[in-house]
Image (tube, rainbow, N blue to C red):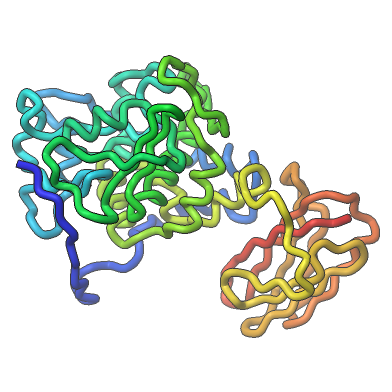
Length: 359
């Protein structure tokens, strides 16, 4: 039986971890990288994972999803990614009377079906009720115009997913938009065409239902969903659970800034701020002016800046300074016009990235 519900979870700090259990050194090789270089290194970190069969008499994707998508209010049930329905976990499919396994990166986008590996990657699979899964089909992710109402009539308020037949798109409920985006970004990094695997890529195009190209859209919308719906505790917990089985992680759950570092130059804002003082999202720095044609000033209102890297759009480091100061001025006279990234490391070892336009 499907039950739509809004679950309020009171989290006890002594019982539930607030941060993912990332193995020590797991992302060391990705430190300080951006663009395609970062994408390639992350692929090396997360590829070669343990693969499971889609359905078998031994441990399979059904069994793992019962743990990864477990209803926190009822440990026997699983929660639908789009519908938020709480469904009987042990029932599994049960001739369409139970639940199904949604491929967030639609399995026809590359025509990989349920083949072991890409077709059974648990980061891409989520529990969902049969009818909602069927309605989503292989629709692109984008803003939709018509709300989808499941045949059971159990949807309530903001948990609705939207659909549009004319544009062939699907818009998840707000609580899962960022989750969906980070799954798609994971798939585009994990599957890069190596060792006979598919090369899955993002696109801004809205593909028709008949297309079996290994592309998924809409990239720019997914990028914005990632920014607006930040990583939740439940999403981090799911990443930990899948890691225990597959032995690989979704890097965009552990390090949300990697999305910006890889895709920001392509799918981020099309205009660049020209405010005199631009404050980073961490509210630790003022970096100005942007754009600039002579000197950039970086002010830290907390820890000292111990290292500053300037990296061009091809991921090449063009400047490195170690000021050990709260105020840094950088001359840009010898740099060509274009988009650059400033990688800032503070005295506590934390790193921040800033996009800078040089004219």
